[in-house]
Amino acid sequence: MSDRAILHSDLNCFYASVETVLNPEYRGKAIAVCGSTEDRHGIVLAKSEPAKRLGVKTGMVNWQAKQLCPNLIIIPPNYEYYVKFSALVRNIYYRYTDLVEPFGLDECWLDVTASGALGSPTDIAEHIRRTVKEELGLTVSIGVSYNKVFAKLGSDLKKPDAISVITRENFRKKVWPLDVSELLYVGRSSARRLNEHGVFTIGDLAETSPEVLRRLLGVNGYQLWHYARGEDTSRVMHKDFVFPAKSLGHGITCNADLVTEEEVWRVMLELSQDLGHRLRVHHLAASGVQLSVKSNDLKTRQFQRPLPVITQSPFEIASCARSLFAEYDWRRDVRAVSVRVIGLVPEGRPFQTDLFTDLSRFDKQKSIDDTVDALRNRFGKKIVTAASLMGDIKVPSHSDRESILPGMMHK
Image 1 (cartoon, rainbow, N blue to C red):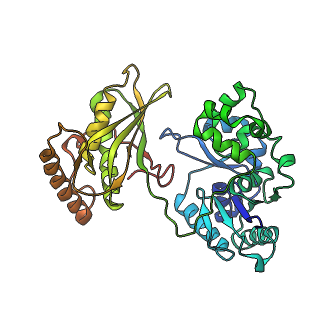
Image 2: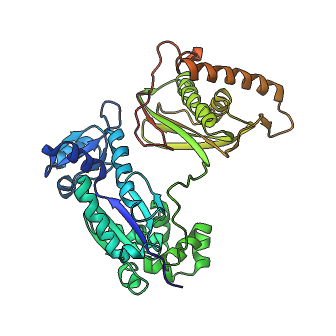
Image 3: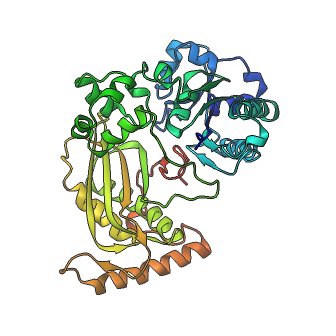
């Protein structure tokens, strides 16, 4: 059986490149797409190649980027355009295969195994690279390989506007000398743990006993061992495939620090209103809640707990988050709050998860939630508002809708 032909296409400096297409006067200049400094999201989201060459990095605070590059042009994000360009690029991919799996807005895997009539995998990659540049003015780096992990690695080997090929014959020479952190799914924590045990390169990882890796990293360690050895067999999903949601989250960073428990409760309640609505839209219910709290020294703590019932109720979600917050060591003011519903199951009548819960109370709450949701769908989100959310409160200025787009503006 012949090898698969997998491409990984990565749009170079995507947000910044789209801004350059929309505003040709930016071409050749150092630009950075950044969150708002006033809203405490003043970090670099994307940068152009000239800015990158001057040391500007994604995640860098705006003022640090300005220090490195005094002539840096800072641009606020325009997500609606990024989404449109992402869709246009995918339409180009669909000309070659319908096995196109997104990995964020700017990256996709393509399985072109059955596209031989259109040329070799490298020929197809070259056609895509040239077409994206000619039709949309964007550049892509493409990795060509026989599995998804190495294709992704290939797209990172040479940038911008380049093609790299990793085969069964050359992967030991090309891949194994790379730092272990370059391998997909090896995060900072895993890389640090591996380094502590003498595993510094992907080759080191491939030659380490899988049982040792399992002890270090659990089941993930065994999977990474297979990846390092070129034994990834995961499929590229069809373009219409929708991954089942395992959780939904909504988090915010506030304009001003939250200094009382009541202020934090109001924020959690506001976040939970949105989560309850999204559960209903997706016909799901939650069996647990996860709360993340970032203090003003930028340290984050996270807690989670099962709900007393499997539910869609915003009030029950917020109440569970509030009980979790009671476990937070209240020593510093709060900078950011994130609420996530976990253990998602198909919607239905509230289902109790223990023997001591009064289910009738939750049935009444569900009736209230159904009525509120119906009113909001008909007359708008603000037609019914919790009393505690009315008045002079610190309304979050920015939301991190984790399951949609990082940085999308809140309300």
